[in-house]
Every structure is written in structure tokens, then in C-alpha cells.
Image 1 (tube, rainbow, N blue to C red):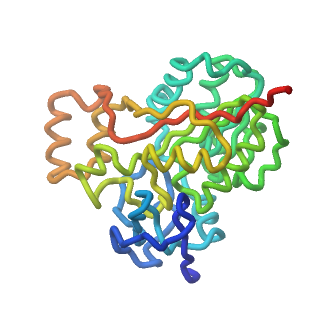
Image 2: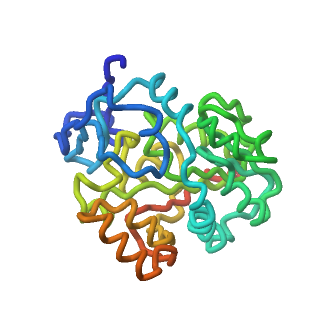
Length: 303
């Protein structure tokens, strides 16, 4: 592994106001592609976490360089195929609830689209053409007839035209990026005037972070920048967007998923009891601590 690199508070542009929130708790040789696979049971590895005392941003620093992170994501696996329906339903519900935002449905793009399961929901919602970007070769291999519409690699290298999308979505991915502000600026360029971006990220001030502290799954080596409603709104505005709506996300998953992800004592015993009661597959909807945001590229008004 190469030397780590420093990162900087996105909102303030300086680390002058930061202090250490958590110390790094792993060795570089501990990291592999499995640890960079989404929705795994976390090892609770995280970089040193800094917290800005001026704007409340929380982020990892120092971190692995971009080229090493890229290899780990390229080799990562999509290990959550049994959960795809629940994930898609949790995300698409807010598109339907805010349907008036999407006056044009010609072209949509998802960054970090995995096997394209949300793209299929967008097709059902009326989007005529859907495209995706995904670095995991394993995930893209599972995309079936959507494979030709998914760029295998990173968003910065995808080469889409300016002003070409009515909607761009990105779920639980913005917090994985070394350069989220630059990516937001690129998304701004690709959206048509009046186009909508839809993101979901972990809420650093959410329920699970408060309950579990450093053991919360959000404090993870995959996560470089963590957001709250204020910091997510502020960097969106820095990129040129109008903030339309910021809201809490309700996730509905089987009880088995919640138990698997929760850092609770005697987990196997609790899981066994729940299994004995026949409740492992029962879907439970809660607000665990995720933020949704709709942001708009301002329309061009004629004088």
C-alpha cells in the first residue's frame, strides 16, 4: 500500500477548525476487495475521522490514494442480490412521491448503479432512456440487458455530454468519493437546465450514529466524507444547485437484514430467537439515519 493522502473539509476548504473524532483502527494490510463490497457485515474499520468544529463536517483523513481505492472497488462483489427489491422500493418511493419535479423523463443516469436494479425502476416510472456508471465488474456482469447502457468504471471517466440528462441519481455513493464536490459540479454540467439530482447518503447525525457511536456502520473505511442535512445542502449549493427538498429516508428491509447490520451483543443468539419465532423475513420499515435530497440545476430564463 502507498502512503496515505490528506483530505480537507469540503464546506470550509480548510482543516484549521478540525479535531480528531476517532483514531484509525486498522493496518493497511487489513484492506482487500471484500471490505470494499457494499452492504457487507462491517469489520468496523475506519480511517482517522476528523470533525470540523465550524461547520460540523465529518470526514476521513488521511486516506488511501485514488488509484488504490479504484482497484478495490473494481474487484469488489455485489453480495446483496436477495435485498435488491427492498432497496429499489425504498429509493423509488420518493420519485413517485415527488413526481411533479420530473416534468421531463427523456434520459436518466445513476452513478454507482450496481447491477442496474434502480434503473429498471426508473423505466417503470416512465424514463425513456436509462444509463448507469458502476466500477464493480461483478455487479455489471449481473445487469443483463442493461449492460450496454452501463459504463464500467468511474463517473469522472464516463464522457457523457453536457446538458444531456433530466435526472441523475446517486445512492450511498457520494460519501465514498475522494472528491464529492467536484463530482457534484460534473453532475451539474450534465443535467439539463431545470434537471433534478436525487441523492441518498448516510446521516452522520442520524439515529444509528447516535445509538452506536464509533460502532455505527457509517464509520467505515469505505466512507470518506459523511454528511448531515446542513453540510449536504451547503456543498450542493457550492456546486451551483438549488436545494429543493431534504428529508429523512424510510428503509424497509427484512428483520434478518437489520439484525445482520446492527452492532448488538449476542447477535447470533438474538437472531436464533427471531428465527425460532418465524420473523426473520418480516419486513420492518424504520428511519435508521439516511438523508435524501432533491436538488435542481437552475433553469435558464430568457430576459
